[in-house]
Length: 366
Ligand code: 13P
Ligand code: 13P
Ligand code: MG
Ligand code: MG
Image 1: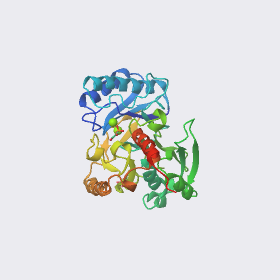
Image 2 (image 1 turned 90 degrees about the horizontal axis):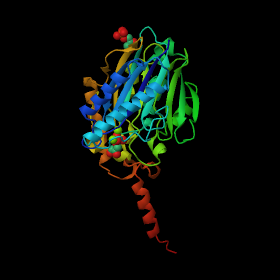
Image 3 (image 1 turned 180 degrees about the vertical axis):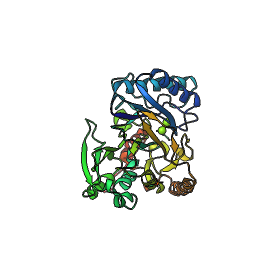
Image 4 (image 1 turned 180 degrees about the horizontal axis):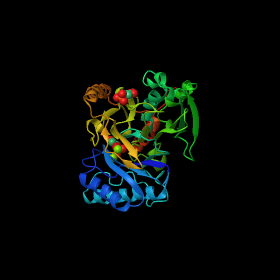
C-alpha cells in the first residue's frame, strides 16, 4: 500500500493585518479535520506560517483525492466563518471560488502532494513559506539536489550517484500544466537557465535517478494567474523526502542559510531575503520579511511523529540576524530599482491605472 502526504494551505484570515491567524481560527480548522476526517485521514498536523494555515495530511487515498481536498476546503470554510465572526483581516482571502469542485488546485489554496511506498524509516521535511511565491524554493532545491558544494552526499553517497530528475513548470501558462523534465548533473546549465527566473519557472517535483522515487514536491499555484488580479501572495508549501537515496536533512536545510532575495514582502510587490523561522511564527517588519518554516517528521504506516522544528536551533538565530540585516539594507532604497518588483510583476492593479493616467500627460517635444 502506498502512503500519500498532502499539504493543503490557505490564508483564510488573520489578526491585525497579514500577521497570523487567531488561535480560535486554527482550533476551528483542527477540530473540523479531526472530526470529519475520520476514516479517510490516517493522521494530520495543523500549523501556521505567518498568516497561512497549512494542513499536513497522511492517508492512503492517493494524490488529488476528492475526499481529502474537500475535507481541506470545508475545514477552511469553517475557519473562514470563525474569521468573519472575529472580524479578522482578509477572511477567506485564498478561497477564490464559491463552491468546491473536485480538487482545490486552481481554487486558491496551495497544494503539495507525494505518494510513495514507505521505506522502513521514512523521514521527510514539511516546508511552508509566507510573503513570497513558489519560485522561492528554486535556488534551495537546486543547491540541495544538484550542487556538491551544498550536498556532500553527491560526492560521498553511492545512493545518489546517478543524480536527480527535475520537473519544472512554466507557471505563466494557464491553460494546463506546461512541464519540462531535465536531468542533473548533465543538464544543470539548462536547469539553472530556467530556475534563475523564479517568477516564470518553478520546480514542481524532483525524482531520484538511482531508484526512480519521488524526492520533492512543491506547490506551483500563482494566485494572480487564477484571480486575474492581486489577492495575496502565493505563499508556497513543499515536501522533501530525506536520507538514503535523497539528500540528508542537513543538506536540504543548508541553502536556507543564504537568505536569498525573493519576490513578495510588503503588498507582494517587493524584493526581500527569505528568513528561516520557527513553527507558528508571525510576520512583522514591512509585512515581512518573507519567511520559511521547516518541520521534520517521520511517517510509519501512515502515522506521523510529532514534528522536530528544523529552524529552532541557535545556528539559525545567527542566520535570522544576518537576514534581518539584508532586509534592512534593501529597504533603505524604498521603491527604487531592485527593491520593488518590475512593473509586470507588480501585484497591485493600482499602479496599472496610475501609469495609464500619467501616459496621457506625456508630451513629445519635436
Ligand atoms: P549519524 O551517524 O548521526 O547517523 O549521521 C550520519 C549522517 O550521515 C549525517 O549526515
Ligand atoms: P499575504 O499574501 O500573506 O496575505 O500578504 C499579502 C500582503 O499584501 C502583505 O502586505
Ligand atoms: Mg494575508
Ligand atoms: Mg500569507
